[in-house]
Length: 487
Length: 74
Image 1: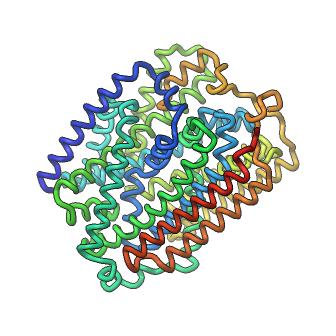
Image 2: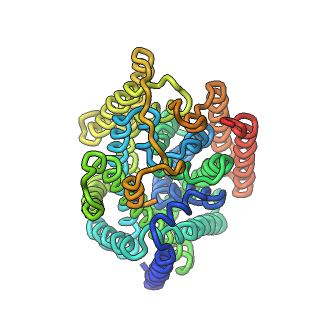
Image 3: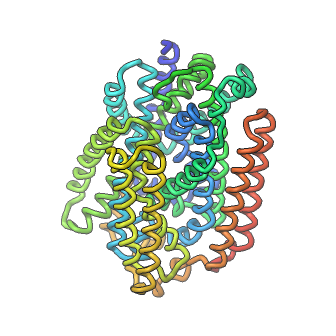
């Protein structure tokens, strides 16, 4: 990589760390941040909803798919459109009315505590994939920038994420996330315009093999449906609940994910176009996740490529930072604290610190094992696929029972994830059908059938009443635990 | 749940869920069809088609909100 680009990246990060440090100093307590987050207006909520999804994984992983087949990338991204519509049309208003602060709280409220614990465990497992996906994205950027091996770059990435977290922290990230998203968005548009003018779509159509533009037939339909399910598996997570609860008004909580749906039309377009331009200009690329970075270095002036790489790196690392803290909070808040109420503040904080390191190590091992951004990400979403039916049922089906929800999530999750891992270990035939489609379809089908049958056979019992932050009547102990949370 | 305030126990009526499912299906089919037939031919045409898709999602979404959700739970 050119020295100029590396210099821009270093300067950008020094400025970012200074901004983060100053921002973090302006907020005196975590409580300040929680209250601010509970009053998000349209622009902020829309920004955070879109920025959360538009990390390095989306901007790098989707063009990586398009490098080989344009429409696979299109279907991958467009699967998020109906997913955002599920969020906005079905989930947003009923959840916003209750304002839970964690997904555990929501499942405990609508079903029972057992369901709350299970969704907390599934969240922690799923977050490992999200963290690993961000770490792989970070590693790919470092690999291109420094030329070191994947393993060395992974170690470098984990170390820098830790330093970034320690210096800027979550509070600093709040101030820089939107700015970085705007930078990435501008960078991607600029890169697309430059590629259109310097190469052109007609050149791509002429020179790339016809298979590259194939609509994929029935396989395309199966792929799109599976991706829609996988995108929905990303819904029963804490950060979705938190974003819904932090909206100022009903209209805002509805409109923000609607704009999220629109943003993924852009993602589909940019992903397919940039991946295809990379396939034409950089043939033979083995690590296709690097396509966008390498294309930016090839087509943009050093300052443009440097800014795009920097913002990608920063957003990816800030996501990794948030994802690292989120499961830690779930474990401490929802799993350890209820069983060990005698633990002191200091002990809980120490446990949280140790857990963060353990999770980072586990996620690094997963990243080194699976290596592909998309592969890592979707593999762990198979654990939460079975949580989709109870989550959606929780907003409209009063008869959905705790037993049905629990056993549906457990058995559907085991079948879905089990089949996915069986394919990774070569126990089932290779290919999309046994590797992606069947595990997803069976996972969600089994969960739905169990939920419906048990809810009818064994009717609902009263859910546990959970007091929420918004109602203002939570105990001091719970208030303290909330302060440990990254949001 | 009955002891809590009414909007805490808010559930969407099943008729609204049906409309929502139909909207999701219609929007998804329109978006996929437009991508399959009109995209990646000319950058300006791509831009127009993207804006059309934005308009469809925005107007159907706001119609659904105004008609079914605005006064829900009040």
